[in-house]
Image 1 (spheres, helix red, strand yellow):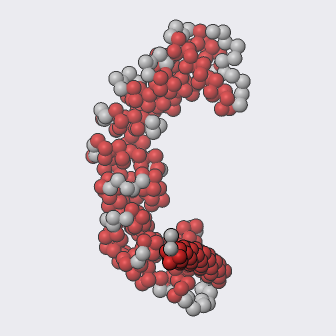
Image 2 (cartoon, rainbow, N blue to C red; image 1 turned 45 degrees about the vertical axis):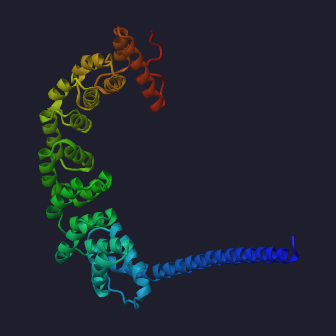
Image 3 (tube, rainbow, N blue to C red; image 1 turned 180 degrees about the horizontal axis):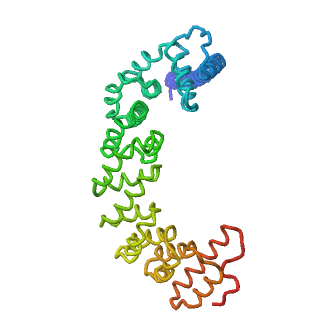
Length: 362
């Protein structure tokens, strides 16, 4: 190998090493810069909170404190703090915080962010419009309700419900049925916070008028409802529906004794899912007269039906240790005996007592 070739290879190696060193140094500097920016940002947020949190608290109490200039860089931090405080207060405190927002012209900036900001800015802007509760923002919020970004559309739904829950409930429910990216838990919480009496009419109309998957999706919201009228809806579904999934979900939530006759009938349904749910319902609304029905269900061919029936049996009025011992002694089905023993042992462990079947001979 010639010396010229060796020199060339050495030069290439040195160049590669130098390049790698430059790249590594660049990465270190970039990480350091990001760290410094993060620390500087944390200091800015802390400074904004230290200045504005006491002022917001005073405003929430109905006071009108003198306000320092709100620099543009601080606006987002203060607006976020204002929204957090709005979420944590009740009654007249909202009005005091809104009065401060008027002094700082939050509405104009929030409206711009709601339409043209980055994702986080849009969500924050929509949340602000909801707390300000201006009827003139409804059209803007209705447009955002159909946004392809789930976070944006949910923020718009919440804002609409805050402004006028009665008018917004049908729109929000229809959008929930239209799109699959809205979690039922989140939508149910929004409807509950809006007030059961405000959303109940629209909800019941859609629930009773829907079918198939739409009805099932709406049923998932029902556990968040806090209206006495929802009980009658569940009873109507149990009385009218032939869909095993609908019946299963409705039976697991029903609490009214008026449906007891239908629940007893459904305990003999051909679908195991319905029989299991009916057993759960009997554990809540059943009477001592249902002991024989649940005893029969403990011999069901489906394990979950047997399990739920045994659990319900323990929950019936008048079911004590003596009654359980007598019942077990009369059982001829091995699966029923095993399931009763299993559930009794499970129940005794959960309450920390002695085994419920202790001393009962096999």
